[in-house]
Amino acid sequence: QVQLVESGGGLVQPGGSLRLSCVGSGRGFTIGDMAWYRQVPGKQRELVATITITRSSNYADSVKGRFTISRDNAKNTVYLQLNSLKPEDTAVYYCYAVGINSGRKYQYWGQGTQVTVSS
Image (tube, rainbow, N blue to C red):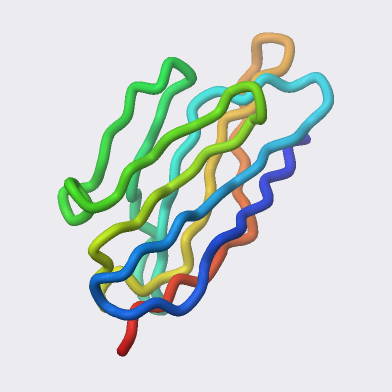
């Protein structure tokens, strides 16, 4: 099993910034691809950004140029820097990771961290 623990959410004014972190742990597992998703009540969870173990990244069009995903493989940690935040960025942000064990891949989710953008 892999446990993912997110932190860094909170309340911020429009135009502000936040940095989310997600630490993965799991004995015997290698953390592979990681990602951030977000979800608002009544809507489907949507992909925000992904990053591979070699640090190749992709972003949803809605966050390109404003959000940056990064990772520290030695710490099994993925980050999401959120800049120029808009009210429509308000959501619960979830960390996602692929855990690899004995050649098999498993999907894991964090518990979510709330980001609220409001004046």
